Image (cartoon, rainbow over all chains, first blue to last red; front, side, top):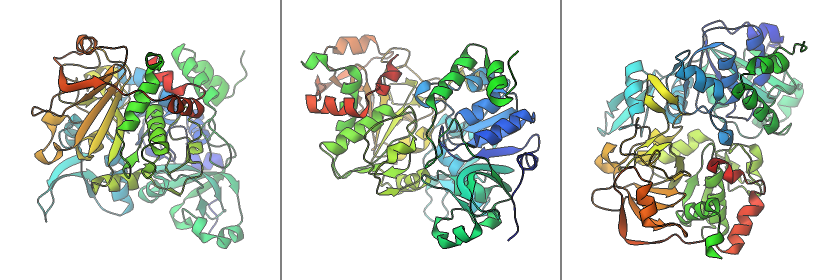
Length: 273
Length: 253
């Protein structure tokens, strides 16, 4: 095992302009928000984002002009409603939106994690989402060779980088995700590179005491960065809850055309003049 | 007292009533009403249901809901974690009995749209997306659609985009699976030979005619149409206790 402990700057260098990215967590839970803010600060461009049910993580990158394409099952702000930057830029044609559906996106990650070119799923037949997915080449109707059952083959999704915020890791990249995993383990196995930001570093000795608590072993992980509060304002189970007030502040900024001021204050952290 | 029950509470109770004991039930994202409905069902007529949360907890003791239906605090005292991909495996095996899904538009055959108003490549309104709808709608034995605004803009002649599959967009094998629609005015089903939407029950204080006037296609009342059952005070109190901030009312603004 060699140390993969990385500085924030070095870790973000793993993300090239135009990269295909996915993030850990779901909606307002354990998204790698501080890493995402760093991508904004570094002015990354033309990213393609894919995930089943993201929220502020995607919307912030879209609002900051870092994104060319998005593919999601649903992109919204839970009970607070629409994702404002996603909606605006999609309606203006400033980003390309290719809606998927949760299962085909997850199955695409699973295929890549298993080293398969595709994976069959049920459902989808009769939905216009299948029609548009066949056009872009992400899904295709097939017949099961044994039963003849009509199914959908989902093309493997291999992100250039999966970025996951976890609770703990050692310097070698043995990672402990606590509580709900979402598809984080699958995404990590599916991606070409994996960056894990963590609340706290623990020793390799500590990891060896309870190997069953390790959710990602070191050979899957390319970079570990210690980033306390790295999911804020999303939650990080066992550390902090979602800051729903902050999320509403974000929504108000986006709605009032004061999103640039939000970016200045909360992302660039520039003093207001 | 019956006409004093608030609409969100009536809807929660109607949604709970769609769950049978020993059912395996899943809720997804942005789902305060399903979370409350599942919680009510488990504490009343369906104590042995398997409750799978979008937050991944199994059989959690829901003492409070939050603006996110994935909030890990929803997993209090869970017996296990069960990921969405595992719940989807279950659905493919035919072992997920009930799922709750939303709709920005729904038509007479039960097709739902959560994708776009207008054209998919040039949307007039970009909607959030269907999440699991296109996957779960056809293959799940019972899908309950909740719609908090029963108007002719939501209950439309034909959806702009088929996100979730109604009966005219299903294979024969998937036509046996049920769709139930719970709106702010009544409960609708498709239990007739043509598999078109009909009124199963009307919420107290509303009428069949009011539902017809607010529906963008011809909708008939089922022969045995009745009044939607109202929750008793204990259930209303339970809903209030779990949702003291009134998050369930957020979709009604």
